[in-house]
Amino acid sequence: MKDARGALVFGVLLLVAALGLFLFFPRHCAYEHFVTQRFGDAKRIEQLVGLPAFESKEGVVLFFEADGMSGRVEGAVIIKSDKIVEVVLTKSREGTGHDALSAEHLASYVGRDSQRPVVVDAVGGATVSSRILVSAINERIAAWRKATEPDDEKKPIRARETR
Image (cartoon, rainbow, N blue to C red; front, side, top):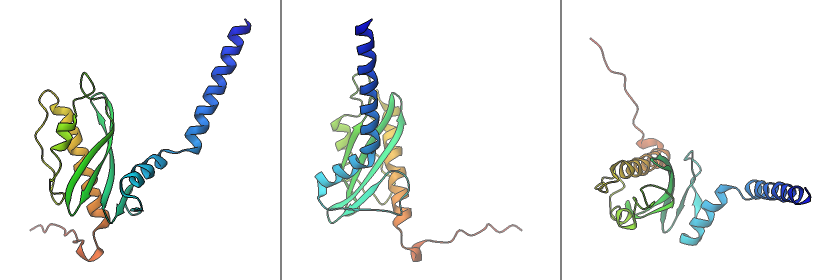
């Protein structure tokens, strides 16, 4: 009986400690840490809603996430001079061995133009996972472009004339 009570107390203390860490070290700190490690000083792009994005002299880091076939797919796309220079996955369980979105596949994004939708070949046997990743990256780039586009470049939407 004494051992069960001790295990319960230990479990409760562990749960309280985990909750404390979650509350005091929010997820956004991980994003800032990632960017600081890569670029040093970077400024958060405030006008972009959702996951954070950062800009520095070295480029832009856009964090993305999507629902994959086997859970969340999370990562970052790094852009410099309108070209994708790197795609990093921070969380993915896609594929049988959790390797459907391999380093080789991520490397296929490098050098792609970020001005228009990114197109890469799907991974054989992981077509859906590949498409999910491409879609998440394209959506994040489009949101970034829209949020940071100067007001004078935003074109008004015109109503269609009916006759």
